[in-house]
Length: 72
Image (cartoon, rainbow, N blue to C red; front, side, top):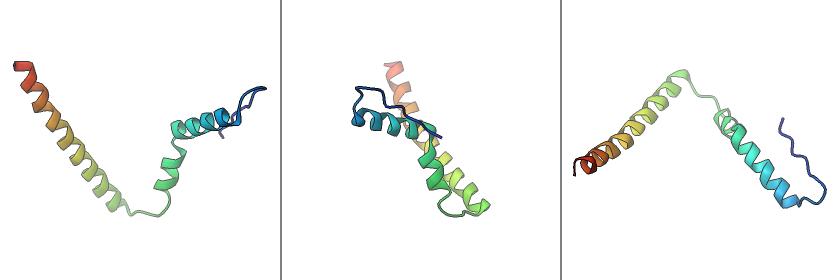
């Protein structure tokens, strides 16, 4: 459970922003969206492979770019 202690003289806006940061860091909303509906194990594997493929494609774009400037 996430707790934010509001100290004397601390504004509510500051406490709210601290709460939002703690929620984001704990990845509660990510897990909530993930559990929003059931996904078959095969669909999870397919999505995981697609994400890995996209990540590799993004990384390969920067690899040639970095290598190009290293040799110049």
